[in-house]
Length: 268
Image (cartoon, rainbow, N blue to C red; front, side, top):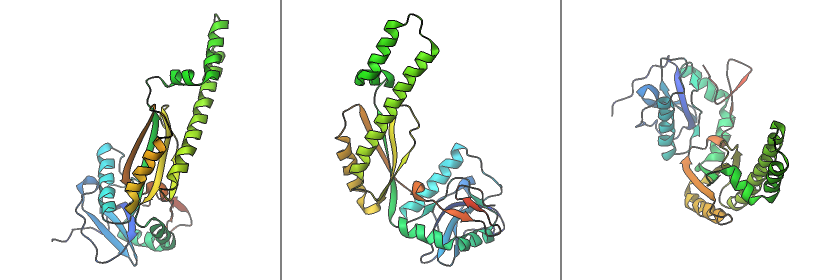
């Protein structure tokens, strides 16, 4: 197989970090800008990168898709620490210095996440009108609404705001209660759970679960077991396996500086 042509002086888009085991592999996947993906080793650690001519990359759909495709390919072939989209190092030497400066933390992450994947679980209320659903299932909200409209010929804005606050407090309380029930069940099927913020009004919870690769089938059983605690208005949707983004908390030191940068920041 022909060797990949690289330019050590060009900026490097960083996709992931992993242990440098065996010979440097040839990756059969293209990165951003359709560039070849390759490894830069420094001792026991390896960075997976591609060359770029740009100091920054735009968060366009095609670029994000290419980044995700690389991570999906890498994850299928072993344990990697995924880097967030847009991390760029100045050149190959900067990559090697980065690996050396953060050796201990990177190795600790690799050990903790070895043969683990991330599974996502999103639970939502499967109803056309979430407010009316809460009115029908929460007497206190129904009574407050009916009382407001029965006694007020000209409802003021602050009265509507107060009713809205009551709805939101009930919704948030239900979210918390449901999440605790689900996490209690799933704790037997995964090693760690991170609860991410609900993005949509109908979202009940958005969980990231760290699961041993060999136990993914058992995790699916756990999701089914948790779903049986709820009625049909609760929609359970799990996804994965993914690279364990939510479980990587590296603070990467820039070797030439006393400052730290999050792994999502530009390292150039």
